[in-house]
Image 1 (cartoon, rainbow, N blue to C red):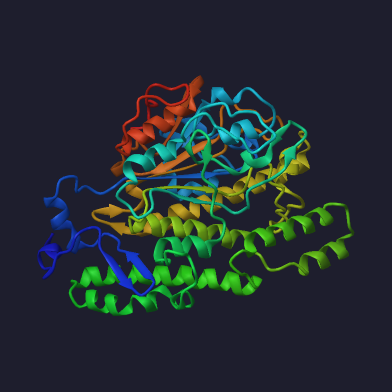
Image 2 (cartoon, one colour):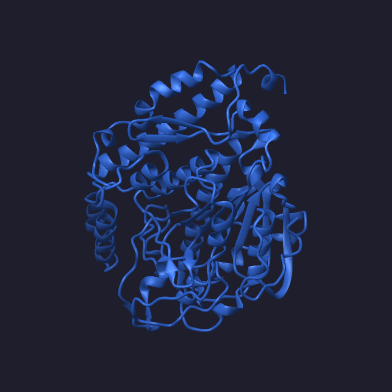
Length: 468
């Protein structure tokens, strides 16, 4: 409080740094808190993030031992050990509406809606309801720059999966603005960055400012603000601007390495898929290594981490309070041979047929995804906000709508929520529920804690017990 009282200048929470072609929303500063405290509804927001992992998990290596607060993390979840007291691991949940239909698509399309998608081989896709993230966006996203932010790593899947007679479009969407309007994931980090920090012309044409760092564009405004802030706020602002600079550098480094233009990511991924197919046809070790070495140096882990850092920046600056991220489309065949001990594509390895060699590789892919989730939690916990940190006022979900990829089992889906007591979570617990407990009860509970008013969702008409 002493630092707040020493401020010579106060500012509203929704403040920006501006320059030609750039608008940077600011993180919470001490100078903002007196005006926030004096205003109606001036409390700090709760954020919701949902990270989607395709193709299920190795089920015998997912569930922790023990329950309640007396539990031990499983091998797949072990990368979360230092966040154990911030976790809610939920066992026994299911989306009853996904029991019908074969394969992945019914589970993916209805993960956040709790409904059964319309079976079609065309473009007339329908989830049957608005997804929980978009229900949140309609209510708590109205006052932020972006009501919600949808990110991913792969272009929208096209064509028909003739094995089950569903359009592949369903594999690419978990966010539904309405029952028939899915929100596609932005897969180009440069475009996502620009949505957060640049001001595009009304016509969308390229501007001279597009080739300059956003921090250079707002430098005059930043210096003006620095001269008015107390020392603690100067440090916070420096940390924020350096974080933006670092993400911007990494985006440009990825683009330079790949020779990337505005539309390269889909083309690059198509190229990589073609190479993966060639590799998977059984070429010899030497020719396989030659093929791998000839690829563009696309670092999937770095790409995912850039996307998660963009989510963190969006939450930190209150540019959005709702975000989703798809590590991959469902049925993705992404080759994970960059992991030691893995040789093949994700979807193929998920169909393990209880082969121990495939199961071990499947587990390594699962664990890799958990490691990326842990990275995002690390970043959020590092960032101070008010009397706590960014993670404390967030609910960050991670999971899949399929238990076991081999059987496409929709029962007892893998799901973890991380966050803090400021978000109302009873974290540090492994909660085990009766068979048949609706996954949608979890979504209702998260919405309730974020201040979203909704009576029911899917097959749930009340919040899940045990959340807090």
